[in-house]
Image (cartoon, rainbow over all chains, first blue to last red; front, side, top):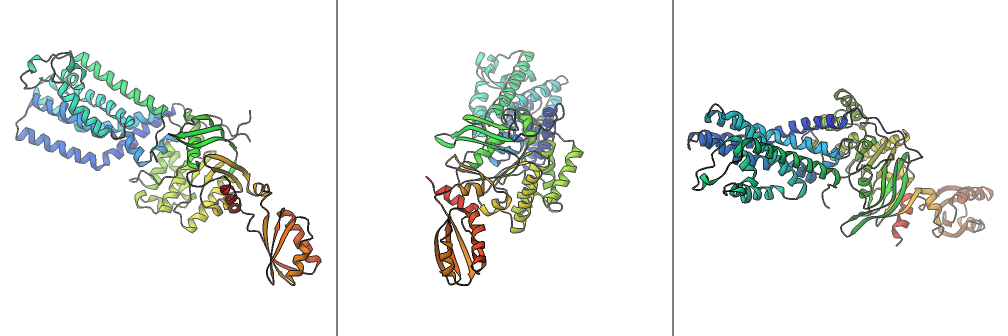
Length: 247
Length: 310
């Protein structure tokens, strides 16, 4: 009773399969109603703040890079695997000869590309309105904040049952208020580093003059490191843990 | 070293305080094997362990000689049809099967060709173009089976594959499962419907309360139940009562009951001996035997016995 030889796999199968899986889920994500509703919401907010509130340049950048993009990352990234766990479709990917971490990475990137589409365009427009040197800074800050928050929220989706609520609490109760605390504490938030990369003003609060801004290059490194660490941690976790809907 | 397609060595699996599988030790080779047991007996848990979806808490699970959870390449040899009715509902059957076949290492063209051939094989050549959310339950089952076999795996795990299928679809799927086994694949099928399992295979694994209760050929297993003689119902033309007393002379016959003027029921310890001895005795005494059936020689009888044991 001896089993047959293992069927062969092409060289570099996992990365190639992950690239395919990314494209497959990206196409599905871009067809989802949620993506188009968010796109509509972003357009409406953009029109309102430019038309009614008269926000320009730094104000627009603050709103889109530091307020709306984190929310978009939250809603798209927390559902990366949670949705598949709840729908019980995770089994189809996980029973294939592809490393789980590769599938996870593909799913996270497939979730973040729509966020990039919704976040980078307003950031570029805001940057253009802020001055000739702002667009690259705004785009870099936006891209890095999408990756960093995406990694954090996707990881949260692996760890807890209701990641969106916990993520929202993280944004509202930690990121937004602590970023306004003068001194070192502000640097413990991703928002502070995104602000530093974009070169955005600290805001209109009475103590905003006290806020110290880290160098842009250091903040870019911090955001990149957070993204890399959370992506790696998510991949590591998913390769070792069982994921199935509890009966 | 000779390794079976699937093996579990002293495997236990706990969900919190519940021991879903308890010291399971079994090996499964080529051909179709039925995985049987009452609800909650641990069948799906065993399937998920073999598929690399779960990790054993104790013991060792092997798929084609490797750990299916940690060694991803071995899953190239696995086809899994899960129990749950879950899909990417927005896709057509073809797109669903093709996408999953791509993950098994096939190019787009190869995956498309394999998908087309497999959809034809499972009877979804035309209806497979529908979106999955628009499919009937039977079509969804066929789609699930298609994605499990499109990449030609040597091991196929089918968890309740006939659920929701209509009678014609059931007959087709039973024939398909048998064909998969005849092709030399190791096919492990779990089902609650015993006569359907019986139509697929005589090789069975019984699990109850997470423990392995029996494994092997149904008839051999049934033959080992010495404390449970077989009942045999006979229809005769002639004097049933007189023939009944002749039957008592056969060594393996324990009791004879006259059910009607032309019907008898006997109990025997050896069905093979009865199948040979009773017709010969009838012929010798000029009795015409028109019916010889045993309600105890089937899978259901064995199943009832095994689940009735503490």
